[in-house]
Length: 284
View 1 (tube, rainbow, N blue to C red):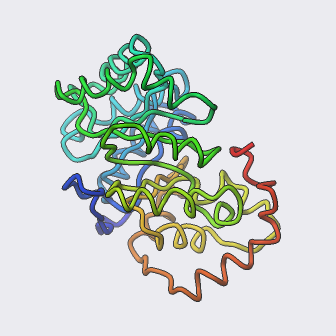
View 2: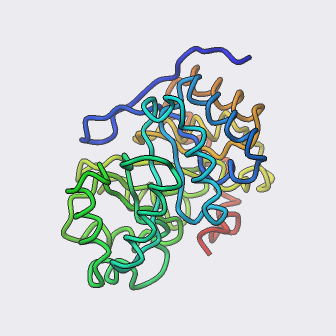
């Protein structure tokens, strides 16, 4: 049995919401047997994780179905629920939104984000083919409370999304030591998001595990502490076992922001391995 000590919370941009600094990633739970995954989600919530991540596409909808089951019996009211949508036109957006609502067994999504803005032309298509209009209508109707977007490949596409005529609530992108040195979201997009009073949601603090493959001795605690020391609202973490859950909860509960010199030292240690994003496979 894990400790029920709560973890810190932060404001989600200018939404007025507060969320746990550690979020539970939706992809990894779809890799577990359903019973174990449901238990893992509820254990995370019982231990103070309030921000839940998911996406329409994860494991062909299985991740959303598992999370929907886990959120029965009063758990839905304890969390801030986010899922993501691949729709680039009105028809596909609306279908995926309705699928997500059904799978998650809820009448509304706290935060819906356009998922994986990674290809040229996607920002323009979302605006031109009705997906953005459909999202704003769903927000007006109460099916969505807040709206954002995600991506992990090209900061310039996030820039194009920021230039659309919409008041985004959130943006999600990789926040890790490798990212600082190559095609850097934290350098190119984070300042603009903060200027627009958007919440930044961090992900890939371990660079999809590549931090450990780099040959540089960076621990999970150092990598997660680095991400949490940046101006983000929450860090989505891929958690695929109770052991990893306990480890990440302990890091979050005892987190103290790194000082400027600590941050610089970590960046310098990883810099030789950050060349051209060779360990950031998701940027290629």
